[in-house]
Length: 132
Image (cartoon, rainbow, N blue to C red):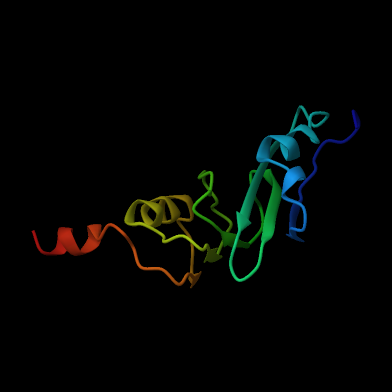
């Protein structure tokens, strides 16, 4: 790989969980890219229980040059994503006020936002701010 000057990628994978003994962690995934020492690689791994046990793994090169960033969870690592125009959020845990602030800061040119979450916020920060 010494001749490779640039490598841009965005890999997302879903996995059905049958055996909880061998679930890869973010660190496990990150170690598979140890040979890419001149490239910044970001990985996120999330596991869910509903409606069935499954995992989502997202690995990408940074800076992120894609126009879509999908299935962001509460585990989002942050960063600046100026090329992204469409963002989708997904989690089985509620998205709190601070999370939306991080999303707004990370995606300054976002045009569309999709949210898939069944749970209400635990902390109603925006309501408190508006009524103080």
